[in-house]
Structure formats: structure tokens, C-alpha cells
Image 1 (cartoon, rainbow, N blue to C red):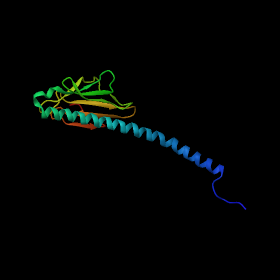
Image 2 (cartoon, rainbow, N blue to C red):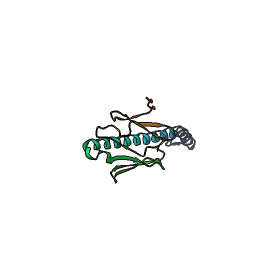
Image 3 (cartoon, rainbow, N blue to C red):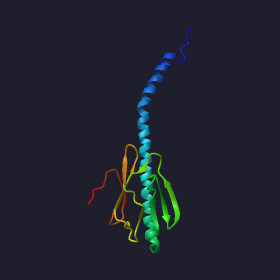
Image 4 (cartoon, rainbow, N blue to C red):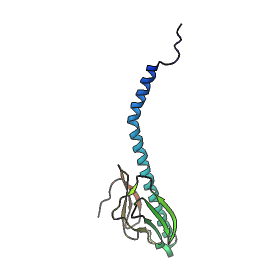
Length: 153
């Protein structure tokens, strides 16, 4: 008498083969999603830090130009939030995310009014497949993220 519990070796190999083929197509999509999430996260952090120094400039008008965000122009993968010569925060972008603004601004700071000290700027963050723009509006100091390059006026 034969008991039919379990699977045969052939059935197991067919199932494993099907799962392998499906994972071959799924893994690149997952990898791309992770890279995109890292880029989104880096852009959101940069936007938040720009808004932070803008708020500090508004809150402490006597020393507003001492708050600045300084970029590493050589490596293009990190920046520092500074108050005078004191480093308040050091941020390194995730692996593969780079600042692609050319030329890289040495520093970004805001005036007492909240407007950027050097006028409007666009900072580009990129990985191998995507690019996001962190845009600082010149007149009002609005900081936003976009996936399309802003028009020059």
C-alpha cells in the first residue's frame, strides 16, 4: 500500500525553478526601489536642513548670516550645518547619492527676511537612474523638491 504524503523530487524542482525565474525579474525592481527611496530620503533631509537654517536665521536676526549649510565640493556626498565655526550637524548622503550641482555652492545661508543670501538656487541630487532638484526660491526663500528642472527666468 502506497501512502501519498509529501511531494516528489521533480515537483520540488519545478517549484524551485519557477520561484527562481520570478525572483530574477523581481530583484532588479526591488533594488531600484531601494535606490529611489535613498534618493528621496536624502532630498527630504537636505530640504529639512535648509528650512532649519532658514528658521534659525529668522529666529536670531543678529547672527543670521552665521547659520549656513556648507557643501563638500570635493566629494559631493556630504554637507555640514554650521553656526559660525561650530558644526551643528554633519550629513553624509547614502551610498550612490551625489550632489550634482555645478558649480557646487560653497555655502547656502538665509537673510533675516528668510530669503536666501545668494538668491535662488537649485541643488541637484542624483543616483545612477534618477535626479531630484531641491529648489530654493529667490524672493521668498521657499524650499521645495521637484523631479523636473525649474525654468530659468
